[in-house]
Amino acid sequence: MRVVSLLPAATEIVAALGAGSHLVGVTHECDYPPEVRALPRVTRSRLDPGLSSGEIDRALATAKREAAPTIEVDVELVARLRPDVVIGQAICDVCAVGQEQLADIVSSLRHTPWVVTLHAHTLVEVFVDMRKVGEALELRDEADEVIAGLAYRLRRVRKAALASSNDGGAQHAAPLHRPRVLVLEWLDPPYVAGHWVPELIEIAGGEDVGGVPGAPAVTRPWRELSALAPELVVVAPCGFDVERARRELALVTDQDARALFDRRVEFLDGNAYTSRPGPRLVDAAGLLAQLIHR
Image (cartoon, rainbow, N blue to C red; front, side, top):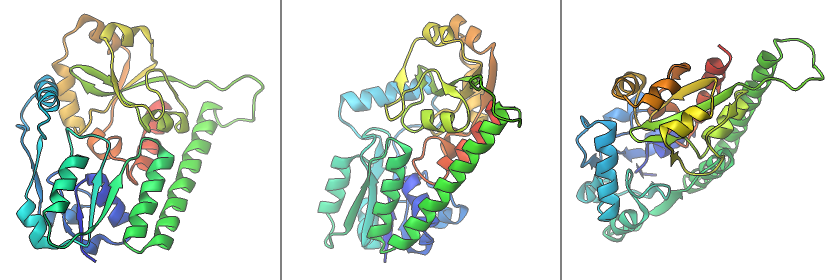
């Protein structure tokens, strides 16, 4: 079976199911597991990677307003790869290959592949998407086993976080302290992380003071964010690693923002752990627990 993945999370799901050898084409952003980097790249970004957060945001806004995709797909390459399955997404039509773009690609192929569209906004929905991929690849049992293992690991993170909140002692009558946590997935303008991130914070033993489980990320003024009085600010920009996140934070000069960042600030690799609705969200829960209870 030949699979083309149009989403990094999809690539990671296929690999987690033990079907990495089925991948014949991936996106320019697919970098995990490391062996997928050698596969043909069927997409490229139309945005200059050297743009700042603010410049990227303005470019994305213009693309959305003009209904112009920022991801270019090499349709001829996809056709040559002759995929039996193409995996896309329906979460963001601007920063990834959207539904209309995917439909155009599929309609241009001589052989019509099985199209799997990922559309997760919560952890449960991520597991549902993993089952959809497993069904398409005829790996239903493998998908169930992977999901069971991930769910078990999340329970372990929750249990360990509970013990940390309780200082490892016996149960107390008083409510356990959950540190107030704010997760930022973009800095210019500031976006509060949503979707599955508030769930990860809760599992990790914190209280997400900015995001709503299952809801999209939202932009809010720095003054409002500072007024939330978080005990911990986690900076995890979508698509950026920690080094890039630190550089972007250094560019923020807003007075209210600086007041917010006078609190405890930690960084997380948003590109690897919080931006992709796939298996490594479980790793993100463990890393967030370490940051929260440090």
